[in-house]
Length: 407
Image: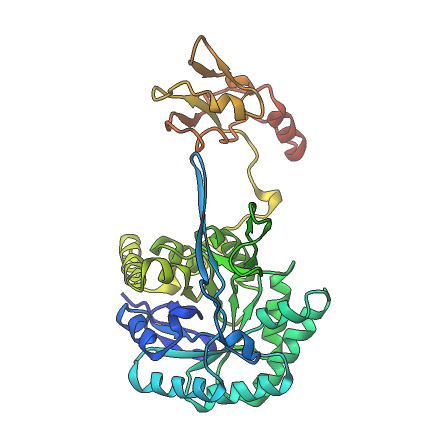
């Protein structure tokens, strides 16, 4: 099995899993832990021009839990700032890393002035980094978010400036705060970027309702976790085939399956972040092993055999089959809680005596809303019987849209 791949400007990697820029890649010692866990490379924690960002508040991490019955989620709330080092110390840390670890070392910078973008890029290059990632999200968020048309000019200018200053491969990281990542990614490629990275972490805010103020330190914070996966996958699928440079997916990766999904929608490499914080570097070992096991089970011997497969199968809205083929059914495990009847939009679930429910098939659209929320796992979608034609609007709409009979 060959998991090897190439990243920015042909940077060779033994496999596609990387550590994203974060506190987990702050120092040589942490890069060594990433290497020991089996990661192919790491993007070092970002060097900021603004010295204020080089000092972290304390505390700076929180795990926000949202529990509402079976609907549960968690968010890793992060007030962590940039690398603690100044440019000189940052370059020295890269030199030490290249001497002491064998994985790819990718520098990361975020600046506010043209002079710093060029200077910091040269620091990373002269220190011997394998590539450079431009954190274009934070400077834009701080200074330009009030100018909706400024982002295209900003990213184009910075990338051209950096590519003129250095010769090492340059990857550009996209912010999730935009309406058209595909357009921006194309501009990044045209400006000279050798790879694009969707996305940096989402900015967010939590509020203490008793204090009536933002939690922790009174400001915005980054937040991430498995919930971010679907946003990232959707945009990578759109980017696949629209840019010719490699795509490094970043966001929501918690398991090997999540990494596989990134590759299936077109990512060339996959960056891990939150899972390393909350599960330890060993999570990367498990992800790599899981990727190998999945490939073996599928009979794949290289990444190219399946990369982008799901993106190629992505349907446009007019291609989605709108014929109803299933109907809900109440199973024997039903406890009579009545949740399914309360949430059914079509009032197709009726009570038959005390704590007994059934589905009126002719009223059910097969939407599936009742299945996953059921606390007893009693609801299921089953195939419609042959020749069955529901009396709701699905059949009529199918006739109108396709010009064909529903059956």
